[in-house]
Length: 446
Image 1 (cartoon, rainbow, N blue to C red):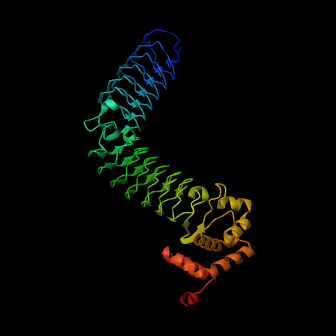
Image 2 (cartoon, rainbow, N blue to C red):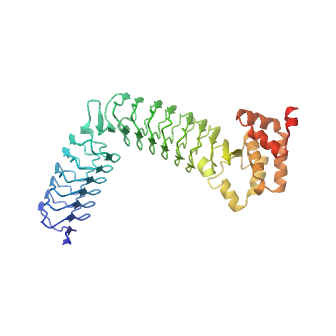
Image 3 (cartoon, one colour):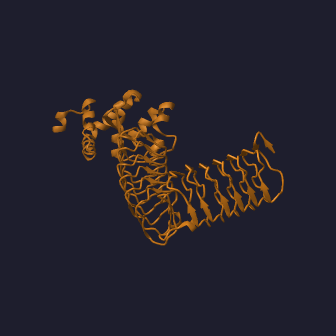
């Protein structure tokens, strides 16, 4: 069916098709899942091949696209598992996401010089692709565009296209990425996740893609070079042997779950310049004892530190609620309006956070349980004291009786609080006690 120059649907059963003159566009899914089609010839004048136009045409073997076509849209030839030959015109400028994904028997591809954009997974899993001619002019190449193209490997077992490392199929346990690589693409080392022990990354790499080192369970130490700006989602997720990683000051983005389940990671310093920490970034980092968050961070995602059982301190410039802290039993150092306040957090339930207490009016019960270290909350004394002081600094929501109990608790344990203050290198804590009238400079000197 052709309407206004758009071939919208094809109902025939021919094996060879010549698109009629006058057609200017192949509509979305026009030939999708056609089991009979073997070859297609396009006339001049067709400018666009629509989304999924030939998707899952499993018998399609040969496609010749004439001059004039500028766009091959998303999934246009996805899953054409028997496609061996395709001619792309010089007029082409755009190859969409998943355009040729799973074209398992495609052997040779020449990308025209006019192509400006190749979408994510555009040639993903084209496992027989042995020859790729592509211009250096193609700057926008999507994530995983040539992933799992195992026949494209170089002598080092790497698939590198236009300075982007898409895959590693080698056998070396200690991998050296060559000079000139600027991007490590998504899940690049997934094929060797059980064997790789070390990776040397050269200067010039600026981008660590989603899942780049995901589940590399024997990777112990890693240094990222100066110049890296992006650490993608799950980039180091489940690297369970990773003890330390050096992150340069150039990094501005850390994706969600970037270090999730890195159970051997002991400490982390996030560099100045990072503006957000994604959801579950450090979830279940069971060995993590300390983390420093810079002033530049404006947002910390949900459950960012959930399950970090050994985490003793988080130094952060912004307030963290329960959903972000993930039930960490530790001292949280929270900077508010240039001053530092101190709170202790419960690990009771995800809904049991300070925001919910404000909304539901359960402050009295919360205060009493914190002071008495009751059956619902099992705080260490230091956490209780720090939490008490934090509540005194925010007295608006504190009942009169509980304020008196807090003052008694803090007064009774003033020496312990001083010790905590010194260990945290935070004299503001003592100054807060003086300002509240709980202690004085004279009593501290006595």
